[in-house]
Length: 115
Image (tube, rainbow, N blue to C red; front, side, top):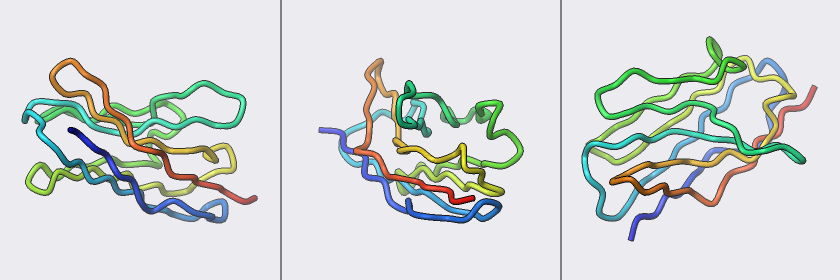
């Protein structure tokens, strides 16, 4: 059974930084896509950043240049470095894995950016 566990959320002031981490456990294949989505109150879940195995990362336009995503295949982890955060980045952030044509989600971690 595949499980994704996020950590690192919290409260941060606008202009600050925050780092989210996700540990993936269970049986997964090596060729997959991992990353982060987010959902703000009253809005649909949206892509933040994803990265395929051996591929280039893909970012939402609203975070490009401010956020970076990285993966460590040896440790089965994926991280999201959030810099120059804005109040509109406030949301629940979900770790995401697409593996063998199936989608997996973490439980979510709250990020709140104060102005």
